[in-house]
Image (cartoon, rainbow, N blue to C red; front, side, top):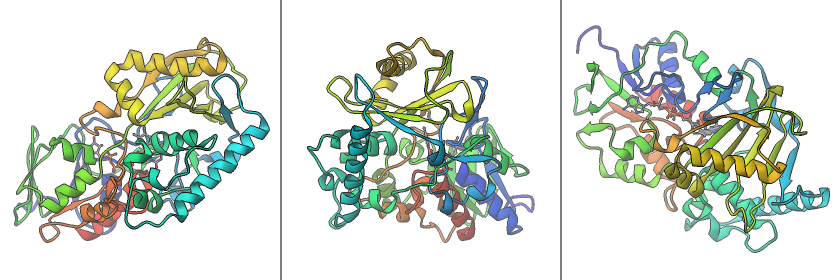
Length: 405
Ligand SMILES: Cc1cc2nc3c(=O)[nH]c(=O)nc-3n(C[C@H](O)[C@H](O)[C@H](O)COP(=O)(O)OP(=O)(O)OC[C@H]3O[C@@H](n4cnc5c(N)ncnc54)[C@H](O)[C@@H]3O)c2cc1C
C-alpha cells in the first residue's frame, strides 16, 4: 500500500456508505467512497423534475424517535398528525363506520402477528387472520404495499422483528435531499463502478473502469439485488454462509409514481388514500395528495404487480396508475405530467428493499459479520436486524461497519 492509499474503501454512496464515511471521518480515519452512479444517496433520491421535490425512493423517516436521521432534519412535518386517511372501496369511499371497522380489523391483524410464536419460522400468512371482510386488503397493504413483497414470501420472525411504527416524518427537502446534504465534504467519487473486489489480503483492491484503488479495508454497501446479480465480483469468492444470507434476503419492489396535478381534486394536502382489494382491483395502489401543498400527487404499488408492470414497460405502468386514480375520481383528467420509477430493472439496485425469506431473519446478522479479519464488511439496509428495509437501518449499519473496520 502507498502512503496516499485511504485506510478504508467504501463501495456505494447511499445512506450506509455516507454514514460509514461520516463515522470514519469523525474518528480521524481516511476513507474514499466509490459510487457507480452520478448521484449521492442511492435509494434516497429527491428530484425536482416535476417542479417540486419528489422522492423516487425513501419518503418517510419511520419510527422517528429512534431514527438516526431525525436529528439532522431541517424542516419536516409529522405526517401522522396532518394526514387524514381515506379508504376507497372500488366504487366509492368508505363511510365513517366502514372506515372504523377497517381500522379495528387492521389492529386485530397486527395484534395477531405480534402475538404469534416465532419458532419455528414460517411465512407471515400462516399467522395472519383470513376470511374477514378486510383481511385481503390489510394483507395487501402490509405485504406488497409496505414490504414490496406478498406476505407469503416473508419470514414471520423477520416481519415481527423489523416491524415499524410512527412517528413518520416527511422532510421538506425530501429524504434524498437530506441525505445528500449529509454527504457534504466527504471524498466521494461518482461514476466509479467497482467491478471486482480483491480481499485476499493483506489489504483490499477495488477494480473498475477507473483503474485500481487499494486500502486496508473495504465496506460494501450495495443492495442484496446487486450482490445476487453478480455485478460486483469478489476474489476470493464469498464464503457459503454469506452467499446463503444474500439469497435469503431478496429484494422486493415498490414502484412509485408522481403526477403533476392540473386541478384540485378536493383532497386536502398530505391526505392519503388506500384502495380496498376487490375482484376488479385485486392489487390496488395507494395515494398521497399534495405534500407540502405542492401541485403533486404520488402513489405506489408493490410486490408481484409492480414486477409485472415493470415487464410491461413505463407506458403501461403509467396507464395502470392513471386507471387506479380514475377508479377513485371518475377520470384521470386532473393528472398532468408523470414520473415513474423503475428500481426493479436498475442494475445498481435490482429492487426497492430486502425482505427475509422464511427461516432467514438471522441472515441479516450473518451478512453483517466482518470477513477476512475485518478486511471486508457488508453494510446496508439488508444487514440491519431491527430497521431493515429503511434509511434508518442503512444509516446505523454504515456506522456499525465503520466501527468494525
Ligand atoms: C420506492 C422506495 C420507497 C422507499 N421508502 C422508504 C421510506 O419511506 N422510508 C425508509 O426509511 N426507507 C424507504 N425505502 C428504503 C430505503 O431507501 C433504503 O433502505 C436505503 O436507502 C438503502 O440504503 P443503502 O445505503 O443500504 O443502499 P443504497 O441506497 O442502494 O446504496 C448503495 C449504493 O451503491 C451503489 N452501487 C451499486 N453497485 C455499485 C458498484 N458496483 N460500485 C459502486 N457503487 C455501486 C448504488 O448506486 C447506491 O448508490 C424505500 C426504497 C424505495 C426504493
